[in-house]
Length: 335
Image (tube, rainbow, N blue to C red; front, side, top):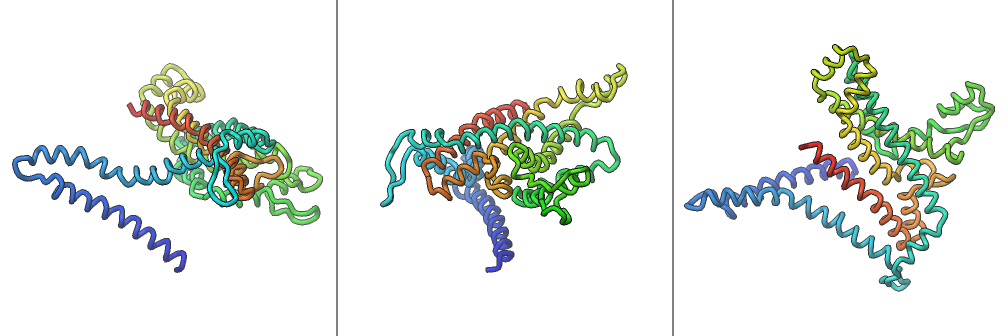
């Protein structure tokens, strides 16, 4: 079957199946399980209204159980076991974790992940906040917002390919198609540089790709938060003689601090799981390894399911507290 036809059928069957499920389950609930007729009509309506939310949530709960809860339990078991040559597995306790902690590549990946955590959420949020503030003050702000948000529509692999061309290097004497090398030579550089092979610097060049993608997300959320600030507070500050910088940093930012934190932590979760960009651009070489790529190497290249699963549990252990805190903070903001 042609991929385009397959995609169209998937959309039709998927969307149609969802609509059919919600429609017919609703009909069955109201007409057969708790019919709204007879002497118990009022009680049945109340019971149906109590069951209906769980009926609608059932597909999501089943999917979460099958595709999230079960894999987590199975991964935990794999991280504590060793696969036997003839099939099956035996319990080995924390041996896989000890082996993982003894590997320099794991510590390189952990160090790089922390570098990403320090840089990407901070710059993405800062640039997003700046873009949100400036685009609200210009005539063509909506067009500017659309252009800034556009990278969010590109897959991480697609963005990596685009930026790999930006960092591309041709031999000396040839025309440089890489923008960075073209600028480097224009401003006095001696010869083209293989930017992605330069340790430490290459990590920051990879971070630029994710910052470029996530800035649009931060801008949209923070722009909505800025629009929600009461005009009375800003007008009062102007009457009191506050300049634009004071209004922004002392009036606006404190009032949207909760939203800034939510954006920051959401991007932090994305950073902890970053894989596509590193895989597509350097494949973890030249000291650019990250935890997700390290896990992939162990699982699918070294076929070491024990250490690979252990690294997956480390990623989950790092993500879970931030995710829980983010949910709690978001609920607090909604009150």
